[in-house]
Image 1 (cartoon, rainbow, N blue to C red):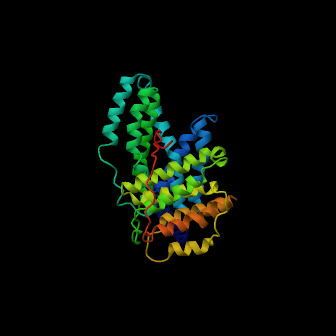
Image 2: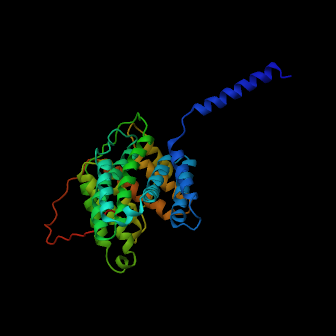
Image 3: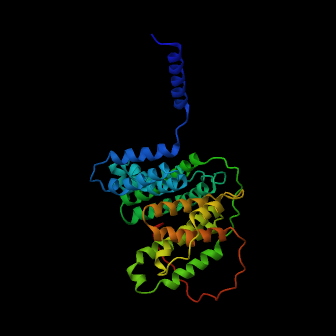
Length: 341
């Protein structure tokens, strides 16, 4: 026979379990689990599974370590290929091979993707808004490119870019579920044109043989990211521009051929990012990345973040310095490429 004390304990445990069941599940953890299950359902030798499962695991690892912003960034970076694969898996054989069927799908998707641009101005913290601005800006270029790509190659290839457009639109809505009210005021983000111009000049100065040949792909990646930063800045999407500018600086750091400047300690940077009432979550995102790289014995990348990228972040929040007019350009070179490739 149970004693009154035992009955009281049972009631308390049942109440605690009921309370836990009523708590809403973390949408970030749920999304990571969803894509992890999607990948594990594919054959072990599947190329997408082999490439993307480690990336999803890294997002899960960051979340488990309390690096929430880094976990979000890693998830958003990994999910594009996964969402495209899911979209392609739902397409019919006719859509994949017949041009008329592909063009009908392209028109249908236009009504879905372009009806109303996703709003990002009310997202918090700043890092989430920055990711949403940068991601949302890719929807239209992917959509526009998909038709020409399908016509000039195969409908199947055009469908891939349609899937990429949908993946980025979905990513913005997903980021909205990660948004939370903030008591901190918005960072004073301004146009970064002077900083973008300066970093582009740095890249061009270093782009010389043999490094321009041996590491051409890395230059293309950094240059493409900086181009995104410029386009976002010109569109007034300042948060996304700041994020892409800092990412371009990080991608370019190994190509300089010189050691990064002496870095401040993680503790000093963390203190600076947390002091005051400004939302420094974009800087916090990069600090979390530096800490993760340091834990993974990637000290060079960690040093580049703390010694170069984060100083650029703080400088970008200061008033722009007066710029002397540069020489008039004598030659204009236009590179034609598919979006974000």
